[in-house]
Image 1 (cartoon, rainbow, N blue to C red):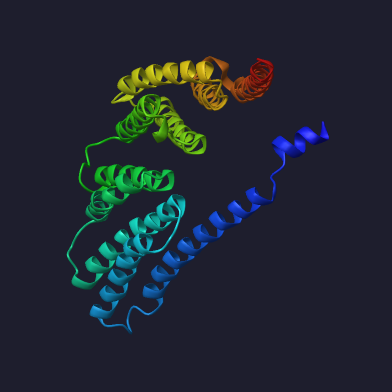
Image 2: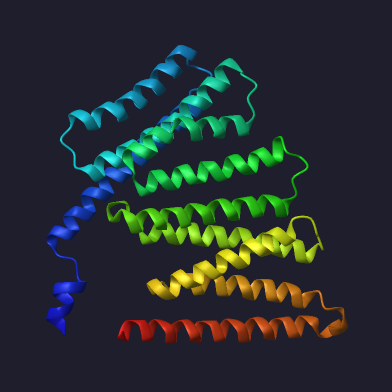
Length: 296
């Protein structure tokens, strides 16, 4: 038993060295990027605009050119390119502040999303893709807040849920045809949790405030994608799918229960019992399912 743990579970010296190399280069890129941002924030009034732009452009060019000349492995190059994708946003922010272009936050994030896309497709790195997806989501939210004033919160949740669900679905299709483009499990889990959280918030608001606009399309898409998610979870033996979808169903059920007027003063007790029993049942079901999958 102990020899099996040493051979298969415990990391060896080479695994620790690889982990430390990746961790150090990741921290170096992250701290350098953050240092550039805070450097501008601290010395903003004391610096000439050309110096500000020169520093940002030099850092951006360096993060793009250095991986071409340094003998770095593919993963290290991708981490550095992720830093350059962040610096694209820094450069856009500097340009807007210096010349007062009048651009809104939506324009800023949309331009950042578009012009860092080349780094995303070239690197094909999970962190860069996650950054790009976050920028797309932020662009949609800011568009709804600053331009599309007639969009309801439920409709925005519907768009975000559909966007992230489609992104995950397309990524799975591509990974099935191209194993080299396989999405990491941790990234898929992040997208799943975010998408289900957005849909749960939308349904929660719609039920609690009795908003009819947009709730029907959201419910239809939720049922469709939740069904596909459960099918993927059971076929691929991924416990994250039933776990997150089950929690979403419990929250929506508790919200529906809170709107039943005939319970009167018993509504809080009934809701509490419903949540406790549902969560306990879900945990027991997930544990048994995971044990069954491990045996198989």
